[in-house]
Structure formats: structure tokens, C-alpha cells
Image (tube, rainbow, N blue to C red):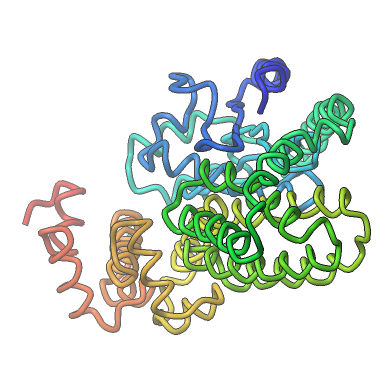
Length: 410
């Protein structure tokens, strides 16, 4: 966001925070640097003290903003603790996502249901102090928030609606490129290939700023090398599409999403017959590939992990396998295992065991149900296996754990 746009968002962020007496933050997605949340290190912000950490919080809210950008500018979503957030997006003058305002956390629905899934007592207490809103009230907040961000975005669009301003960088790079194409076709082709390779490598190395900086250089060289002929430019752009698609997938983006973006590209390119219009359109398309490679890959991973952990919590009494979990999130077994370990620091098997043991602890302390019944409710194959796993995870047997809590000693 520009400093002026950030100031405008801050004004409304304070209004929402004071009016609703709940958290409200800005997610800023700069064009050539890492996304961040403001205000930074806000001691009043619940997420600052969350055991999942600030990095996970940023990833969760980036996901919320990107989903809001896809779904009419607003989106209601959950964090890994099961708390509710509302996001509404801010776009720049070209319609590209540049950030958003996020309201939350909110407890939506039954407070006890949310607290039940939180193992840490101090975190459960902190959650119990949050505002509890009905589903209907959350929907009202979402509508009002999106109306505010739509107005901010509309003002930004009016400031930048001059198409000449949007082409300044590209025109500058075109003038620079002309000087490099004076010695014949062979050298010209080598120069173009050099820039395409540098863009490719920047994406593979995760250098978002460099990739975006090279974008206009590559497009300028394509225009000059093609002598500004629309048909020739389109041919070079289709070649660039192949390079970007492969680099985006290698950088960690979801293959299905990348191929879908490529298909959109190919279906839309034939609509353009004017060089200037084509230049503006392709700038936006290539930026979307860059965002897919750097931001959406991590967001997609976070979303998959959240869906997987939620499914495990809801179905821990059932037989869970890597096959069934992979089918649930539409990924291969190896890919799911890899990103889950990277995001959580533990294997899927270890996480399933952790969820089952935590649930069994609650059941052991809630009633006098038999160990056989508890083992069945928590997905262990029998009481003997339940006792073995529980003792390995906690250091005591289920019976000793229950007796110690109620003061029964041995």
C-alpha cells in the first residue's frame, strides 16, 4: 500500500476496533517486499500472544485476504485455534490485491465448544475473555467492513485511472531495451533469453522483489524484439507463459491453480489486438504468476494444514489413514506429508496421536467412563494399546492420570 492508502486504512481500523471493542489490524501486501501486519507488536492484539506465533498469524490472515479477493471482497474464516476472523480487501488502481482490514478474533457460536479444543489452560482462559458474537452479527460486520474497504479502493482507483501513469515504467524499460537491440537478430535473441532466464531464477530463489523488478524489463524486451507486432508479441508471451508456469510450480505453488491460471491466460490473450492494451493486461497476468509463486504457495499450504487438522479433530474416533487424509484435501500422500511436517514440525501420525491423547485426557477428567469406552471414543484400537500410547505420551497411565487429578493417589 502507499503511505496515503495505509493512513486511510488505519483511520477505519481504529473506528472498528473502538466501536466493536475487538481486535482489528491491517494486512499490508507491498509489491516488492514481504507482507506484514500493522500495527506491529500491538500488545493489545490477541494474536501477538498466541502460542501459534506471529508468523502463523500472518499466514492465516494472508489466506483470509486472498480468499476475500476471490469472493466479492469479503471473507469469514477461522484461525488454527478455531477463532473467527473477518477480512475485507484493499486493491490498487489496477485491481491487484494490496492488502486488507481484518477484524477479530471473535468467538462465533458456543464459547465452550471453542475452548474444548484448546489444550493449554492459559490460552483457553484468554479465549474465554474474547467477545462472543452470533453468526448473524458476524455477517453484519462483514458487510459493513467490505463496504468501507470498497470505498477506499474506489478512491484509490480514481487517483490512478490515468492509463499513461500505469505505463510509465514499461515505457521507460522499452526505451532502455531499444539500445540493446542494434546488432542483429542473434544478439537480440540472446538478450531476450538472458532476461527470461533471470526472471525464472529469481522466482526459483524466492526473490519476489527482484522478480517484480525484472517483470517490466522482460515485457519491454519482448515488445522491442517483436518490433511491436501484436502477433509476434503474443507468440513470445506464450513462450514466457511456459517458463513462468514451470517456475511457479517449482517455487511451491499448487499445480492445479497454476494450470488454471495458464488456461485463463490462453483464453484471454486472443481478445487483444492493440499493443498498449496487451501490455497493460500482460503486466497484471505475470504479476499474478509471481504472487502465485511467492505468497499463494505458503497460503495454500497453511490452508491445507488447517483443513487437515480440523478434519483430524472432528474424526479422531474414526480410523484415519494418510490415504483418507490426502483424499480429503485433494493432494498426493507424499505432498501432504511434506507440507504438514514443514508447517507443524511433526508428522501426521504424531499429530493424530497428540489429538487422540488430548481428547482422552478430557474424557478421563469429565466422567467415570471406562477406559475401554474412552479408548474407543478416541480412535485407539483397544484399551491395551490406548494405555501404552497414553503412558508413552504423558509419562503416566490413564488410570494414574485420572487418580492424580481427583486426588486419589495410587
